[in-house]
Length: 352
Image 1: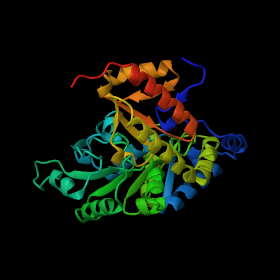
Image 2 (image 1 turned 60 degrees about the horizontal axis):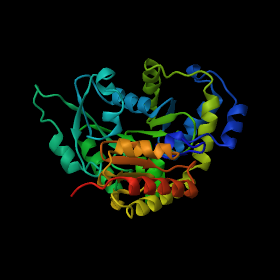
Image 3 (image 1 turned 30 degrees about the vertical axis):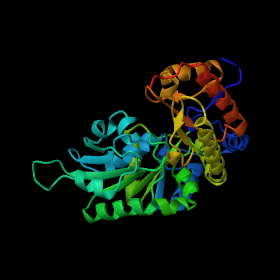
Image 4 (image 1 turned 45 degrees about the vertical axis):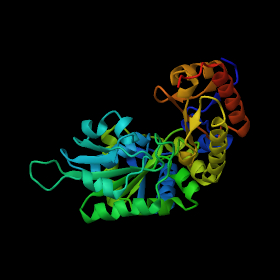
């Protein structure tokens, strides 16, 4: 593989900026298990204010933040309604069952966007021998649907109708700032109707580690205990929180550039033989490229790209998932396109 690599596997591969590294080195720290780390406390206060919630809790990962929310909003034996390709269901190790004793009630949505009319059909009737619905979860942006963004009226209706039935709603907002950039609305507006929200610092915002879960003061007070149960009580975590503060302050305005690069790349890929991208789904920084027409399995296509210094993950037999981010410039996207063009032109065409 060439020495210089273009890595489009995920926006999690971003490296901390020089400003982040300096802030980390200079961070004022304390013991966060005692809730005495001043930099962590500032990060949590900042995150809560930006999301419009009463309080926030710094956690090592988005998975932990999501699973804390499931734990606190449900009781063992209840069901959690979620989209069939959602992160909370597919990529979190079955933790809603292992940690909270809940089962998933999944609904497949072609665009990843769950609407109330289909959620309502999935809810259990109030008969004693059925499990109860304890929680609805939405994901914005929706990772495996290609970074699609919830219409705010859809999210608001789901929260309003669920609340009327006494059901809480949690938002997996790992990329909520991408959604906000796409809609041209502040993240607090997107978060407003939800009982709790998790977002990641370590994706498009570019911090090296960490996520935050936000909600009411009472919810966060309980979340501290759930975090400890999961082994998430960190000590002098201010060295990580310092980078998170820079990420929240400086990086949201940069996300629009990632979106422009993704859109450009998607449009160019649609011109290549054997490749197809649904441009309607390219709303943020994720591109799902169907390479099945090139006559190569996506895994083989990915392998040949790696030989040319471009890293892109296959997600199934026919698709590659491409994610733009702050460490991937337009020049990097152009180089990736050239490599994909080379592989596509050199591959046998699919029959049909």
